Length: 165
Image (tube, rainbow, N blue to C red; front, side, top):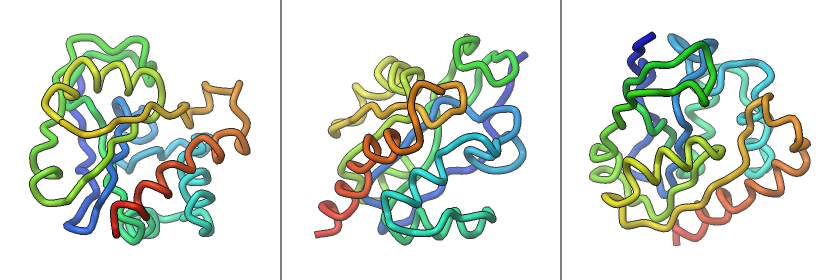
């Protein structure tokens, strides 16, 4: 089924790092990034910044912007079955121009192997910034405990602090 991304990016002029997922899950579409209650993204991000896990969309946006994190996905439109990243076909990438022109992004992070592969395929050549692939926060990545994910994601907080200097 051909689906268009329906969640706008979160960023402002103070954003210093960009975190990119692949494409919104069924639970996230029409809602907000990482809306599935078992996705560990918000727990991980809150932990690396030493904060409580945000609950509302507004709290999530505030957490991101307070720490200089921009958030979006690589893909704008694709054919996808359910929430399966493996089923993504005929992908059209998002235009990162508005984020990169507004914010002083110094580093890109991708959430999971699929986001990393899609970023490398569609966007990396046009974005001359260091990029780091992080383990997916998806519940499908059960091999990674919450504690391991938090440790692996610490570079996001470190990069955001470094870029603010």
